[in-house]
Image (cartoon, rainbow, N blue to C red; front, side, top):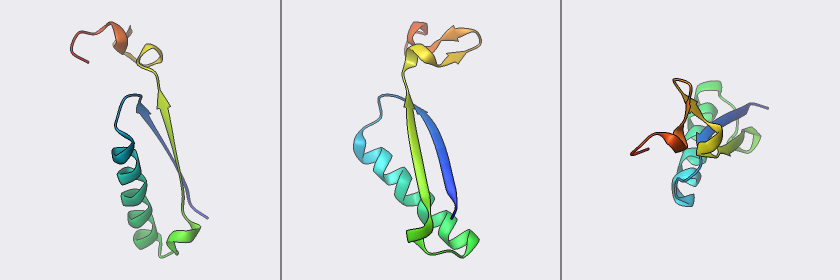
Amino acid sequence: MPIVNIQIMQGRPEEKVKEVIQNVTETVSVTLDVPKERVRVIVSEVPKTHWGIGGTPVSDIPNR
């Protein structure tokens, strides 16, 4: 059973997270020739205060 872990910054609309889950499931299913029902996708949303770029939390970067 394939398991895919995806980490994204918090704040995306729920429908976009659902779309990622559907698209990744489809891709893994086709690529590995396994039924979609066997594919697991875990999406973890990380707060911007806990995601750093260049040593700075994203929450402190303007326009992010």
